[in-house]
Length: 230
Image: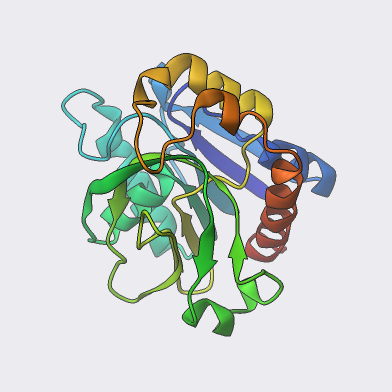
């Protein structure tokens, strides 16, 4: 498949998604919004991946390219392309679908448990998932679940952790793709977010979760294989 992905900051990449795409023989193209690269004039991809970033979907005054990105995501939705949104990418999909994106009560940064909803169990995409799992988080905002979408995951800190729109559009507030190097890069660039809080892990702790990455990547691969099936 030809997969296009959107990058919002140089320190937030694809993580484990890149290795998955290479192993499956998928072609990857990218628009680096932080370089003001233009989005493709036509939707010539088979699927879209929208990654995270430190900005908000509401920051168009500071990041003028957000308006063009919203139109591009809307175009992909109308074209019925499979889409994965991660963190800011998930908030972008929610926003384009007409839902609110607002500050969460708590910042959620580190490895914290997430639970599947009962509705998720009815979805083929999550049949092999455990009821509870431990992904990585780095967010201060959250989304309402758009009209017509299914809420599929929640955490103690954040009631809306993920939603599925139709069977081909998945929005994840959390990060399954994160690598240890990716976490270190986030700490280096966004360490100011790590003010003590009930759902903020210290940097040293979040960098030392033995086995957490492999478990998250296994869940990720199953999702990607289903979402972007040929």
